[in-house]
Image (spheres, rainbow, N blue to C red):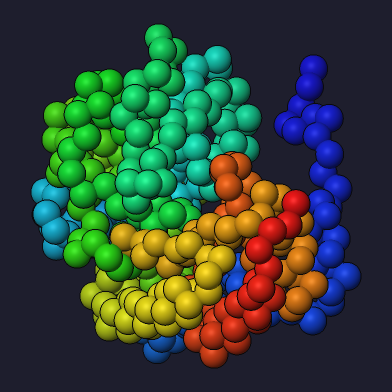
Length: 385
């Protein structure tokens, strides 16, 4: 019987081999780890938030997560635009958004079923699909319309074994935000799994609406956590927020699933109310830095004739198309040879044109220097196989 990734070639690809050989002689424009980019959540808040736990340490697990943590998350959704009214029973605390996906795939699907996912997709999803023996069916995003969901593709990909639709808003890496109801999505009448881990960082969009407020009659599961919002990937805490329709149909079974693992640690759950209450200024400052970095990067790249780049609705990635190239691996290796590391679009499953992914979470002086190198390398280059 075949096991996980049985038969897959797990050796480093050509880009990784070249990166290792470059041994630090490049500027890395791929990092999405805030703790590597000078974005460190204030340690005094973390110390104060943990003090109550150490002085009253008891393990009293709750299947959906600690009540105080869930109430803090409820308050967060009440302050979104538009507001999403929830109660604490509509929150399930997990160790991460990755675990939240796994729980929802277990909840909604059986082996052989499928889930619709955007064609440009973070690589995590395909591995989770393999674990659960389900199929990811890619629906198209329309690049000409700002990477909006293609309704025809969405309809054509669904069949009798489709169990849910995965929506990422803001999308990674295109930055597209779903700001209005999509009739084709409503017509499918399927549960929606909405990944909104970049919701704290709108850019061109004024706000990032929670999809449960746009589709109150459909079951919507919102996935988020403290990794991106508060730059705390090391504290490992995420959640699933269920709108009324999701809670009514699936809440009891999801509670049993979460109770089976109880992965979220008590310490971080205890700290969460203080992190929300006192961490707003940090998130606001991080958001401002990201906005300024996006402004800078877009201005610089707009002056390069072979780069076509769109301002994202939200998030902190750019997904520019490089004109004159049709081989993203060759393009990425060429840029690495000239001292700058980017990710090719095919890492995210997109193989139309030649795209690269740039993280504007990068420390600003490094970001500027890296984009300068990229522009120099591309200037005068009109065609490469």
